[in-house]
Image 1 (tube, one colour):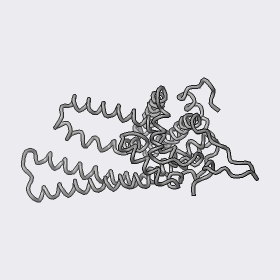
Image 2 (cartoon, one colour):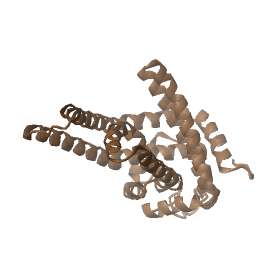
Image 3 (tube, helix red, strand yellow):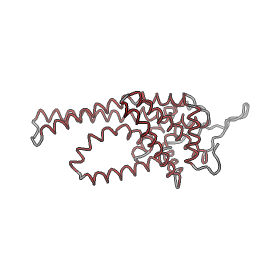
Length: 304
């Protein structure tokens, strides 16, 4: 239970760490489900990266020479394939991966409540339409869980694009633009982070996708936004520390363990932050006592 004077940041860390210890098995299941479902996206991005790199290498080898007809066709085919692959990965991410991420986030929140179960992973699919709307709206706005996941997934593509951008824009200008975009994206992620959790939450009444986005925005007004940003900064520091063993040893196992620590902790800690914000505005109504008339609503279990 939250202490009356406890800040959102302190509560999220305390309650999140406690839930992480109690429900580590279920949180690990959520991590495994998301990681496996993310494999097609990773493979599509790897293939796109290989194609973009090959085109860039051929352009470097040609120098100032104008490419021939066959070379131009090969480059266009490679870039077209990369674009189609990335588009397909984006569609899969929105249609399949993000509802699963929403379900994993619900599992994290319910771990804090003490009612988590494996079926929580399907929460986003049981409220599929509203979850898709919330995901698309937050992605188009440039924030929320959808953008955070997509950003982490596509960081490797930025290296290939940086050389092309550097040739068109002075490095100082490119850095300033990148810093400004990153700052706005982080702020929007903090404000919209809880939309996909709320829309998929089976313990609270059904809510439309746009209404959930609006709810997350209002919940994080004032000091709440800065405390969520602080949580994101802490998560980034934990992720950096967790990546050190893999970077030093070069072993895939170390990378997997590091990702497991980061993802399971984030699910619990951000789930605790969500619980604190949601409980203050939408306290969960307990189910009616046995034999009492059912007042309706959607307070427990998973949606049909």
